[in-house]
Length: 451
Image (cartoon, rainbow, N blue to C red; front, side):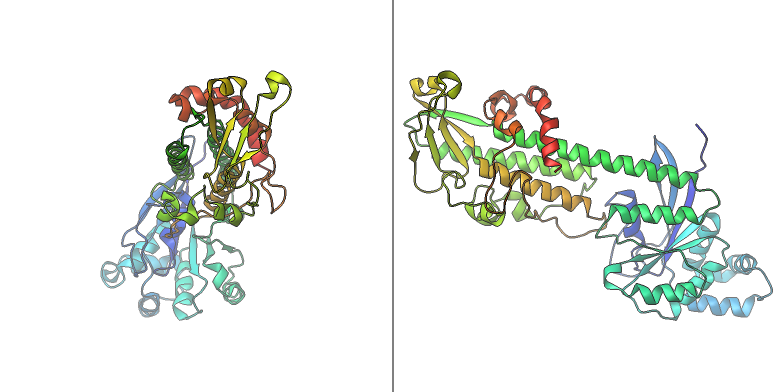
């Protein structure tokens, strides 16, 4: 395997344009540096690495904001000659007392750019084009390093005007990359554009390939975690005497499902390295009626028809197992009101003889759990690590909900889980064993979830 020297990449720009936010997103680290609306939050150069196989492939440097580029331009005009090469003019400046006093921030940035292979110049696209930005670009051009402009907050800015100004300074390669509303292909375009500006692009090509493979791996693992969760909930069951009030058992089962879903949320957040992000607390605790997965209003919000007893979670099927007798004896006993997402069902002849009924989470609730956790996955895939707002569980549609009006039949893996109580650690309290037992069905369910 050839040896690759790590690429040295400086991130520069005016104060408060989102340099640290850019690094958080590229590093997938929501705790790198300090993000603030106050100017000059970053006071020193900070270094971080993008690694592959445990080795740094790219060193990224977060630099202080350029605060007085106009003053520095005047200093260069007064104290250096246009006949000198740009790098010589900057070396004169760096050796001066001014580099340690009134222009100390600018000196830190210039030193780092000169010591790097290239620079990303971050632009807040919402800002009007004024003289300070022209001065900053003029100073950076003296560093004799490739500079690529990166537009942040690009959905709210006039990129055409910015690009015209950059073209007049022979900066024809730029990219739009929002540090909050993340787009994976936008990141790939950033790296690819950078690669075109280097004499040898091998290092960045390696990184692009690595990131694509890692992004695919993340999605596959996230779908695997969601599939395991849904199979576990589908297999979750309780047996109670036929004449016993379902209320206490119902409340207990609901709370266990809520806790297991919260565990899934944390697994997904950690997988995408949002260690310190939060889901909207009201959504996470599910204490309010409109957020509870067992509420029929939430089912309707997801486009699931609740007019039927099944969708309302209120059916009682006093039947005899079809495997045993080849038929079912449907008693058609439908109790009024909401049972809260439980499907009380005496399926087996042994249950009927024993006088017990088996409670399980109903199809509609499983459909909602699938829909909103797939929606959460979509949110994480489109969230930059600089985002400061809480993640809100959105609405979506499970892939087996064929229309907006009905839940649709559960896929085969979930229907099979109904008869496999050993697949759920909520039943056995043996998570490793339950995980192993349902593993064979996970692949089939992932295929359904991916559609």
